[in-house]
Amino acid sequence: MLKIAMAQMEVVPGHPDVNTATILRFIEEARTKGADVVIFPEMAVPGYFLGDTWEQSAFLRDCESYGRDIIAASKDITVMFGNVAIDWQKKNNDGRVRKYNAFFIARDGELVQPDNMPYPYTIKTLMPNYREFDDTRHFFSLQKLARELGTTPSKLLSPVTLKIRGQRYRAGCLLCEDGWSDDYEFAPFELLEKEHLDFYVNISASPYTLGKNDKRNRVFGRQAKEAGVPLFYVNCIGLQNNGKTVYTFDGSSTAYNEKGDVVRTLPEYEEALTVLPLAEMKDMAAEPESEEKDIAHIYRALHYGIRRFLENIHMKKIVIGISGGIDSAVAAALYAKVVGPENLLLVNMPSVFNSATTKGLSQELANNLGCQYMIIPIQESVDHTIKQLEETPMVNLGTGSETHLKVSSFVAENIQARDRSARVLAGAAAAFGGGFTCNANKAETTVGYSTLYGDQSGFLAALADLWKYQVYALAHYMNDVVYGREVVPQGIIDIVPSAELSSAQNVDEGKGDPIKYPYHDYLFRSFVERWQKATPEDVLEWYKAGTVEKNLGCEEGLVAKYFPTAADFISDLERWWNLFTGMAIAKRIQAPPILAVSRRAYGFDHREAQNGAYYTRRYRELKAELLAE
Image (cartoon, rainbow, N blue to C red):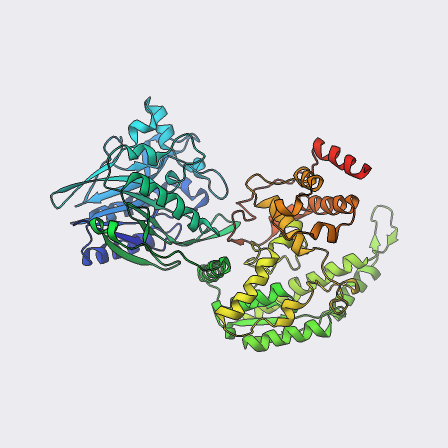
């Protein structure tokens, strides 16, 4: 009876030596457990998101060398693993050496060649070139190879015949995107389906995205059922990045039987190895569908991502500026779980505009967490800065004339924010021996509701891919489930969100941020996360049809509540669109790395250029029509 092991391993990007050691350890474990086959993830040797490290020939040679170590370790066991494959005699379209994203199979120290492939490995067919993926920049696809050879992908894409203990098995080998073919011109899975296979293997390096696992179970379960054979999906765990955006890889490796049922799922964010007897999978009971709420998955992704990020940069201590607001409170509760309260320093930095309410809530939060706490008032420093700016002469060296700067109330707000971050938090972090966080949420990041070199500063923006409503949900989840007690004070959850930078943002009077989160969270989400991104033209079409809330997914009645007239609605829409496509882009470019959890995160995922706001001809027509009514 054929026994197949799924090895869910942590892949450390750019470190083939570390990854190969992990692979060799898992091979030995699989052999000990009686497995005939052991499967590892896509790009298990080099990692996946490496930027232009792929252009280093020395690194490529190292990956080849470590690949040979794995092949040599395949005595009496079939090892399936992902690695970069190099044809040193050919070139990519960029003139550099030819590289393939490849699926290797080794047995008894030798590679097993797919039936019709010109190489002793399977080449990835479908190259994702959207979101964070940039495969066509570095790798040559099976489609391109087929054109080069004067044939078709269907002729090259072929099963691998395995000879194990006197039996022959035919395996269909796919690499990640090859199983997600809905929007491509052909489907590798369907091409292989004609080959009378015994099982499929999909090796993946698939970043976590909220909701992706449910969709994958539907897609891959349907594929297994239609083909009538088991499918093994093996994904990695770990943390990888493309510089600006940080991605967690959750694993969740899954075995589907020939009925399409999920019969084995490996845990999120844990290394694990499981062995399944191929012949018995048909009769295995289907695992129950998870009833966990989305926020539970988001919490695990954030906790794991923060922990691994800190380990990667060797940072053990954290400083957080807390205001008595929800974002900094949730960040504090999250980091306290990762580094421990003894390694967490919370700093409250009140000015004359901070209420006794928020100062008291900050103290309550710190008490609940049992962490380090400081109160450093900033008003004296802010006043000193303003005085220096206004009283120091500004000399025109061409004419010799003198003038003085005038600090407006708006500039004074920015001075407060910069004093807190650039002076207090940066100094406290250096003295404490750690780093300080950026606590921005996604709504603020979308429209640049932050201060450059102020509250937008920090080493990581862990909450910047969460909308405000998700931040509140995370607060409730950590109180109810993670801590099992009220850590984030209910008062912080209840109080109106406010930056408290002026008397116009007095929380005791119910005055807060200009962003109406119950509506704007969803409006801003339509700008970013819809696959067909919404623009003001789309939003005005919905307004005209009376379907804004339906299309955005927000609560009914909010448009009428917030915007009594069409002019009010249009003014609000243009205010935020101008910021989203204007100054906010410059701020996002200078923002810290963002930890991704959504279907579209800022950074290298949502790619943008600084071109300024644009309104289509149809938008201008709609606007004129609505304002004339």
